[in-house]
Amino acid sequence: MNKRILTAGALLLALSSFAYGQTSTRDFLHRNPQFFSSTGTPYYCNDTTDTPAPEGFVPFHVDHIARHGSRTHDSKTLVPNLYKTLNRADSLSMLTSQGKLLKSQIDSIYHRMNHRWGDLTPLGAQQHRDMARRMYNRFRPAFTPQDGRVNLIAQSTTVPRSMASMAAFVAEMRGYTPEADFSMDPSNGYDNTLRPFNSKDYKQYLAKGSWKSVLKEYQTRHTPTRLIEQTFKKGWEELIPNPVTFMTHLYALAMILPNTDYDIDLFPWFTEDEKYDLWSVNNLSQYLRKANYPDGQGLPVAIAKPLLADMLATSQAAVDGNGIEANLRFAHGENTIPLLALLGIENAAVAESDPEKVADCWQDFKYNPMATNIQWILYRNPAGRVLVKVLFNEQEVKLPIASGHAPYYDWEAFKAYCADRMESFPDVAPALP
Image (cartoon, rainbow, N blue to C red; front, top):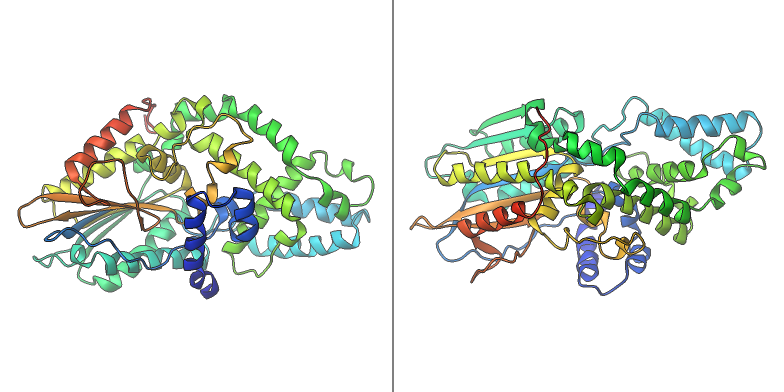
């Protein structure tokens, strides 16, 4: 775990050079193989140096939304099916010597992960504790108001990994603010904002959208089968009727293992080109379903509108003096990917119709590693003027808003910018009736 944390600075440097177009996605991944984990990439962050706020401005409120931290694989069938396939092949003497080695690893993974599908791992809890520590240290005045009363509201979905992420964050923050009044509330009542992917409009898109055929054709072109032929003897077709599914599932498991303490690495089974191809398949799937794919007509992004509206409302309430120092939300990647696009942060809203070009303009490891977060901090001066600074994965971002001191923006100008962004995407049915 410490090794992962210590390399965070190096990872951010690598991403910085990548963001400025200094290398292709393929070259970047070969030089930085940590990111082959796609949306399973463990959270990377380093303590940052903030741009000084304009003179007289002091932080007084934080609004925050985070994906849950590192987890085990969330499918109840993926790992069991790999386990059953390899054990069935072994019982029929259809495994090569390499296949027996792979079976041994899958056996170990299955027995450790069984009945813990999608659970937050120790690394995932640590990510949120560290995030809370950095938030407190960076914006301490917001958590030490002059009246001495600190009120923090935390909300989450009812999915265990999101609730556990909230608990880890709040436990850490409580250590710095022992007198604070904390409200921790996991509830299905927040589904409009924290589970907007339950919208009937969005479910219709997932079930019948044109993206499905686009992804299937791309998968067929970019899914290698060499590994199957290396691990199974002749006749494997009867055991594995769908080699594309087998390979994508095996790669999906490889992606998630860096988030565990199992000390098992499946990536060495794949060649460099195979890793890139299989990563690109997962990346395309994320983009088509959750980002600004043109055929989606803005629907996958629009589901984040209730969340953005809620964050604006809780911040405005703080501006108006409700005495809440932080509104903290813990949810899923289906929240953070659309919200980044809706806010227009770092090219997250790019629209690309050609599936062969998506990997070079939109990368899931950038927009949705574990514990991805968007937060903004409100600052006020003695005259009562309010500024806002937006962070993506705890790094300052600049927005296309006129300002003499970016990344700090006038609160009213930021609200107007958000209203314009929301107006540019369609309305969708709410998750809750």
